[in-house]
Each structure stands twice: as structure tokens, then as C-alpha cells.
Length: 175
Image (cartoon, rainbow, N blue to C red; front, side, top):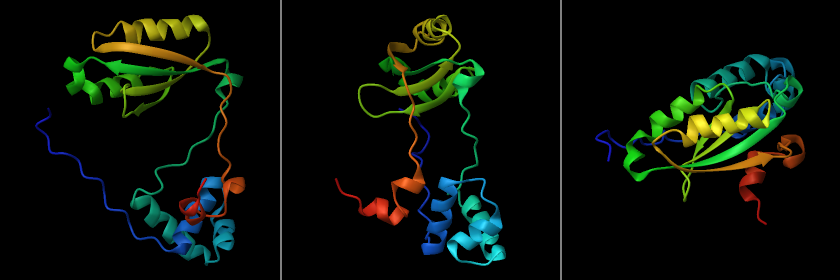
């Protein structure tokens, strides 16, 4: 068990309808210029810019990223590798994840609840590179108990413009 205090999540900032519309709109198109964003959410450009900066400062907007098609760059094999760490290595979970994030083929690492500890998304140029990653970086690590590799045939991403009109609509969604 760690001797460091448990990290408490930051309290959710209070957002009004305009803040939520800004977040929703940027989630659909992060490259939208401020004047168009302001018009889309119904505020002045200066107000919009101030609110966007406040949302960034509050950590609600963590960054702006390009969705790169790695297959067109020669990374034809994507995989999701689930990893279970030995019980004796539980204290090393954060360090293990940080080390994985430094491996060039790793796209992202997710901590999981359940029978696996991590889900590692990787993009490789070949099945040989995938095999080497799993064998050397994972199975070769004494902290790793088990791995399971799943090849990604196709990755689909939600399109906010067609998914709903607001975060509030998503909150109310029922199957």
C-alpha cells in the first residue's frame, strides 16, 4: 500500500449553458476559429475567448489534438493489449504505465478496473513489430503476469455533430 495520501478528484467546476455549448462545439471541431465559435454559441468573440481560456485553466479543455491516420503513415497494425501485473508489483503500476508511454509504438495507456490492470493501444508497422513489443516490453517484464493481444480491424470515433446536440442531452440519454 502506498504511503502517499489518496488523490481526491478536483471538484467539478460550475458551468453554465454557454460553457457547455463551447465545450460541445469544440469537441466537434477543435479548429473552429474563435469568431465562428462565438457566433455558434451566441456570445461576443471577446467573451468566448475569455471563457475558452477559463475552461482551459480549469482543466476542462486538456488540449487540442490532430486525429492522425497512422495506417497512412505505415502503421498498418493497431492492437489493444490488456495487461495484468503480478500482485507483488502492484506498487509499481504508475511507473509501469509511464514507462510504457515512452515506447514509440504506444498510443495510449488506460488504467482499468477488473481482472486486467491496463489496456495499451499500440500502432505497429508489422506483425513482427507487434510481436516484439508484446514479447520484449510486456511479457519480458518481470512485473507482468499476463497479456492478451487484440488486433484492431477498424477504429470508429464518435461524431459529436451526429451524436446529440449537447452534453445535457447525453446526460439524459437512456437505452
